[in-house]
Image (cartoon, rainbow, N blue to C red; front, side):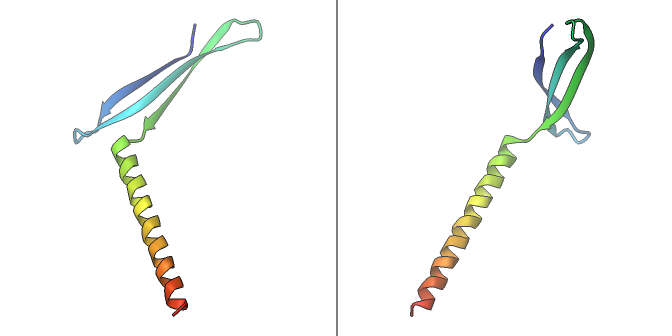
Amino acid sequence: MQRVEVKLTNYKKDGTAFVNRLRVTPLTTSLGQYTHMLGILEEVPNMKQQAAAGAAAQLQRQRSSRQEQQQRELQHV
């Protein structure tokens, strides 16, 4: 037996799709006998949402940097 990992597309009641990752791993005794299977299901973040969040964070850093630069310039006047 081997560990298995798959991505599954599921749908909410409103029809919105989301992706889950399913990992199944066999568990053994110290003698190598299989006793159980361990399954972990986790939601995979939406790549578009991650990209949008990253772009928003970058924009905020740019704004902060500009504001700091303007404050430094005003202090030297």
